[in-house]
Length: 442
Image (cartoon, rainbow, N blue to C red; front, side, top):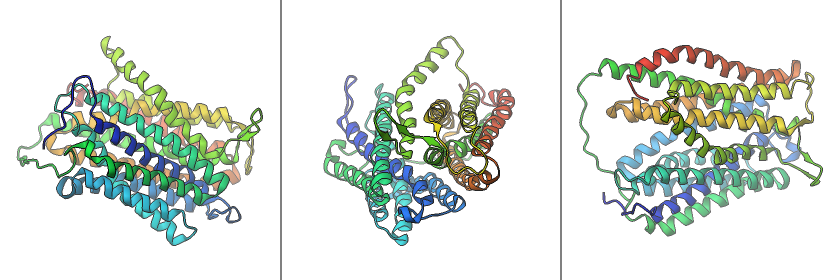
């Protein structure tokens, strides 16, 4: 396929089209995600569904889990039949319809909307990212920078989506929030469809690649590197089952147990707005972490992949310990409290730092450690681990009401301290063996 030409000094115009398209898609996804649990558990008299935490947790876990599964199918269809560009438009259209369906006050429309969102995400998510790389010639020094710019669009969209959809959903009406998410996705689709000429022929047709059937058995070193990928995938599952509490139990903690009143502004912060803290801190801290690894590498002190996972899990557990301490004075059975919002903000800061230690490193090490002919399979396994983690996280959230009845929400958050720090201990012990199994991969 002919690549777009670019210069050393200038990014291709198509990057900015993909930036804004992805920004609007993340606006819609995170705007809807910020509201989902709150809508499910809110009283019927307030326009919600009045579900129990068990029911809400199961649905939330299934939804966020399938979000990681369907891209495997959408990526395959784009590779073989559709091309990345048509897959992105199909995905955007399905998600716009999904958000539009959620704007209607009907259980059929609600379930249809979730189904369309999951399917649309599968077509959209893997293929727009693939087009970013295709904008640049092989070996271009601008490619890494291009992905960094693209990643900024993700976090800007997430921040704005949660801010706008969260406010409309909580203060005006749930379906207005869902509808606003749909408007964002529709804008992204219109933008992409009308300005796609900026991409040249990138993503227009399926990539034709001559495949070579690998008949040689794996070497001992390759097998051990795959063991490392599998073990890291397991610990990433532990990470995501706790981290994704941001949209469930931490959302409920913001709603019921946090003092959200800003007296100096005479304004109560919507509970969903606390989820903007993660993308905001990523935007601020990501460049720092990127420079940190570079500087540590210069003095030969850059931790290997397993140790960065250990750091990520440790920071995640520390964030939940902050919530354990912050909620310590809430008595058993309490359905409301007024804990300072600084506890949540500090917890989100630590969780974001943990994410920056673990998430980018995980994708990088799957790429580095997997044999080329098994790369797709290993990335699939990696995302499946995240899907399982999201589902288990939703099931664990379903326990919150029963635990709060007899103990405290502080006890509930303690579960995730044990999960994260248990993972820290086990992975730290394993890290010495994993370092050997990586056979020089850094």
